[in-house]
Length: 171
Image (cartoon, rainbow, N blue to C red):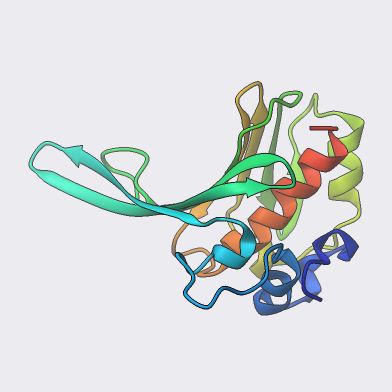
């Protein structure tokens, strides 16, 4: 499966390990710089938010995949009272859309393009796979985000989906 993420039509029936293997684009390194090196995300940095006296930390893995800058951010704290989130960011402008999980199925808000609807229509309901994911696209790129507690490896599926959407939207 290595490097064959484009061949996956619906990852919901697959384990995260299978999707992870399929997302790999780089050969293994003797001394990898990051745990995501084989995904092409070979830059790792700590990200920090300060809220008054309290500091929260997360980790960002970034690099280029398929000609696009991609960042995988683990443990992001988007606001003062919010819980940790994992997010995938692809820095490529696309038509605006929003997708959310509803009863295990991914649903686009009204106004999404036909391409977004086609991608979502090919996916069977999978409540564990898509649990609490929220995806937004627009001129700044695509961001897929979900609470850390929703699915511990959910970001693997989110990367697959964000790249599938970017491909279909011609980005």
